[in-house]
Amino acid sequence: MNEPVMKDIDIEERRKRILELLQREGKVKVTDLSKLFGTSEVTIRGDLDGLEEQGLLQRVHGGAISNYKNYYNMTFHDRTETNGEEKRRIAVEAASMISDGDTVIIGSGTTPLYVMRELKNHKNLIVITNSLPVAHEAGFNRNIDVVVLLGGTINLQYGFIAGDDAINQLNRYKADKLILSSDGVSSEFGVTTYHHLEAELNRRMIALVDKRILVADYTKIGRANFARIEDIEKIDCLISNPNANKDDIEAIREKGVEVRLV
Image (cartoon, rainbow, N blue to C red; front, side):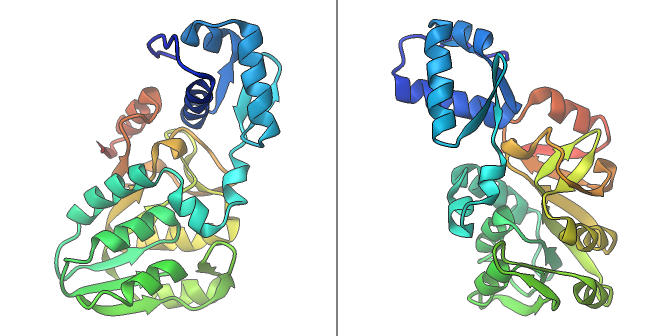
């Protein structure tokens, strides 16, 4: 934890900073937080206990770990709003990599939806997606020539389509670029997802495009989730945020992946 000491901040700001550290690091220690905020370990334990009562973290011996699964219990709208500014900046950068006339596969998730919104000034696009919200957003864009919503098994809670039917339909197409999100990105475990039913479809998406763009806010960097999609080397460009863990970002770069932090 290489953070400047933050003294004389109120309890709400301190707890907000603790949650930010948890999102980035995945775990925190009472001793480290005490030094960071210039306060007693008793005070920090009280902060962690209070945040645990709100369901925002899980207490462990000597500290706390991220209760990241709560993110997946949110509504799609709430997940879209979480880290919204970070996702918007990523989306602007990703949209700048799309050219007029491209055929683009756009995966599911909240950050790809932000990307779709940033494509409003692009012309003559063909969009292929397994995301219900992305398809809905694309339907309001008059500059898109064709929108292909893959058919298959619908996950209503998370707004995506997966399964053999979706894979078989996807195999009919070839695309220029892929906008893919994931729940975890690391040099060791690669690109991973919480949704094992979607992993194979994502894998086929990666195989069918010329350029693979992974959009993942800083909370996803260094994490590994339940289902593995692909090795990180299969990704051409990762777009994330400057506050992503620096060691994890450097390890990903060492795998030959272009990394853009916005």
